[in-house]
Image (tube, rainbow, N blue to C red):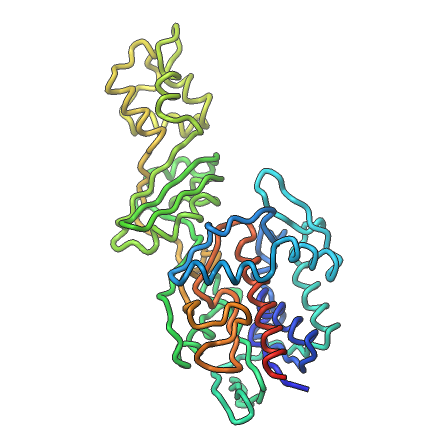
Length: 405
């Protein structure tokens, strides 16, 4: 029986271990924390947004080949992933229709984490928590895995699934990325992705707690991202799914050079022009408050230098145009971001050109498999990054089991 060591009991690693063991390999799952899967536990506000209800491949971000990314995503289609959780884990999934996200019917993230670990145990995986891996190197028998305890494990195949650098309190310390780099893999520079933006001074701190649905665009040279979704003012800046989904463009800009603009309502310029036409004694505020929260309406009118108490008939042409510009393409002042401590995922990582998209096997080292957040790809809020973890984990597990025969 072939021996496989999987490093990292997160989403990708646990899935890899399940499929390696089900493929007939003697599988050992090493985890640095006492339990594993901590990002699963905190995802979706503790509910675990396990998958998207529908998939748009174009929303993934990578500096590697988009074609390779698509091949990997398609290796385990979304309907088959849904069926896996419902059949193998007996975990019915329910769509949150307003967001297009799938959650376990129980709304408990722990059911996902515990269900995966239980399935791993049933397939014969040996789980070793509180085990820190410090290095890995090719050996005559396959791979030698060094541990902080001084003990070394020998394996026919090694699967690295240690995650990235995001939310370090869950155990993500980038150790696997360092191991992959030491083994000669090309690394695209890593950065915090899906993270809140900050502003210093925080111009809109007084709006903290105000939320609404917007369309937001971030642009920096050739990089651009647009998202429609929830937006939240915070004491230090901005958060919410729409902000997180475009944050990577801002994070990667030099000197906070990215321009971030917000369309505060579904109305376009022509529709705002019509809405602001003189109409009896209606005021600017009466129009704005029908479209956005009152506190935001006052702030946006102030930014446009328009008195919210003015009637529409009193509104000068240049004032109307300034207000329309703010409502349709309002600039969002920002100076920084919350970094890895609040980032949902890590951007960058191991180049996709250096893994076989069918098996996740390294093109540099036979018998080494890489999966999950370590790879140069991430998706938007909404279950995309779990879909990536499940797909790459399964491919790595099966690839390792088959390749070591």
